Length: 209
Image (cartoon, rainbow, N blue to C red):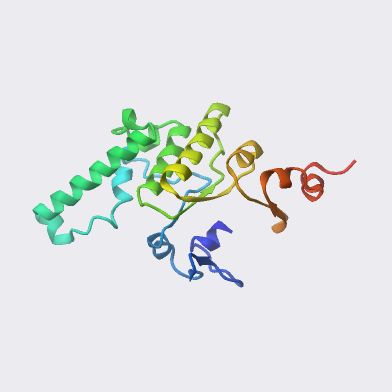
């Protein structure tokens, strides 16, 4: 589903609409420009680049200084680079990554890599953040911290969050509405309390005696 919404696959039917505008079939980079960004279940970072360099790469669309400006390090280019570094510093602080800013991303703990991936999305100022199994590979304490982080991003930055996740404590803790699927088909949508007590969900995931 995420691959269809995010432009990696072209849906064979139905519509994908973002804030009233159809986006089905658009390439992923154009969808990102419209404010929809995503993480991946298997973290995708530039692992040989430093943490701060990963955040600078994510801002390439914002740095509109042009090739010639970059080649000759014009004042416009230096100003754009300075702003990009300042934005990166802000997000390093927000995500608790300042102490590892100059380390290669591939040397970070799994939890820190996940935070960097989310920071790389958030620095683009998205309207919709899609998280693909963000709790995968995290220890219990990191999952608690992730829940607090998602709550804070929604509250402070007004970003909508859509996540696919199998960790039910995280899902129940951060979600306003939950869509439960079985074998690729939706079986119920509702609030956490409604979903938790729905007999169809209990049957699908816990079985019947």
